[in-house]
Image (tube, rainbow, N blue to C red; front, side, top):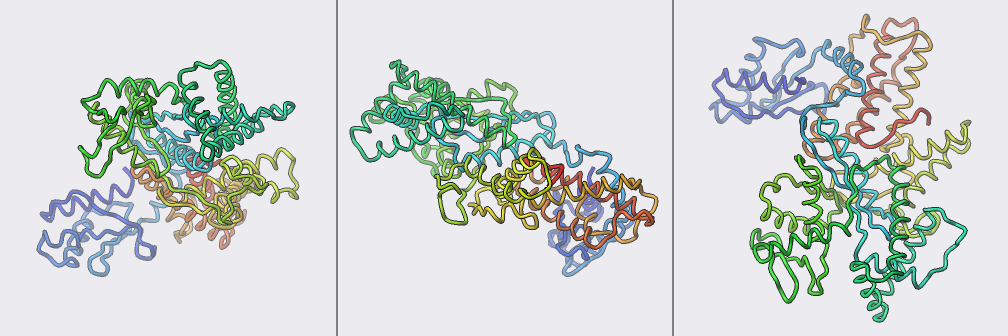
Length: 572
């Protein structure tokens, strides 16, 4: 039982002894640590029920708890209108450092989802189109959520849903047929994928501005679905393979490995069969199309077309097929989490409403998480090389900026490359994950790769610094010990023990930014400690404990960065 739960339980017991029935106790960490390590407003919340003044009730609760005060609490104070402040004992903080070092990579884990199997679907790029910024965002968020869920005891299944059919494919194929010229000598996957992306852009422009081209692309779209044209089939197979390989290179950079890949081409006929089988019970025919009138069941929703009058299944139908396939593929799935951009939120609600009518048992097993948009602080929508910004170009540019910063360092070329990749990825991921989901993000290259600010590289650098202190102390024969302990409790110690609480809250809310915020505050506490303390002096009896404290910080930072999908480098 963690200390927070323990304090909540003793408050509940005290209230019970005072004849007050309470169900939940709110505990918070005071902004000013001079006001204790935990604070509760429980006396104000239940004063009316007890017919007592909040301050008087707070005094009674305090007295009741002090009858059998746990050793983890050094004192309790009543403040203000009736707040009750709890101060943790010196021994508690020492024991928490021991606990961190004993648990190591397991520090921070909980059992909130023990025995559950949870699928997280994220990234979802479309073959034949560039890997755009939105895919980068949903990858960072989805990977972090996957790790948080896993850290909370679940078996996590990572899934990627990719749109390999649809109008975008027809536009790209039309572009390739009209622009077959490419550098035949350059067979690099990234170059070929860029060529396909450019062909898609040309096809998209032609579709919007030329009626004849629009008709040609519409015709190609039907042929892609029914596979009736040998030349188109050949171009399709090549383009699909190339772009999927290009995506894999990006996943490797981002540190993501998927358990399942689902494709629209397979989900479309499955979804169409389900929709038609449930018409007219759930879906309805309207002017030759098949629609779902979601507002009949929820006035906040709206009507959407699932199958067009020409017989083509739309995204909604494919989503039906995907959802049912997920639960069939993983038959004992407890929860399916989907991460997408916020603009897909409304149509996903309609899809989930339709599924709940056909399969009521799945209604509570579907969770949709949305994120905001990203724009560049410069206002320019082009990469450093003048190209249109894609997720991949943003990633490569971030790595290039770091490479420039370490160019003059006395490191091998492999070390420089590894730092550029590790730190460049961290800069982007942290910039995405530091904000609450749904918030739009302004991405600033220079701020994102700063080693002394609110950034991923700052956290990495602080972790590397701590590891360096530990290694130097070890080389000097100073190892972690608890024989002599300073009397003062540092702000660093008052932050370290909170990590499991933060992880549990991030899991309950499915919000990674809570971990990002905590790590930034923790890094600040460490750097303050480092700047004001001689840590590893052989002649200092407190040195072994301070080395233990530094090691506990490094373990916490490393585990926290892992949950954000960020690697902790050896050097920076």
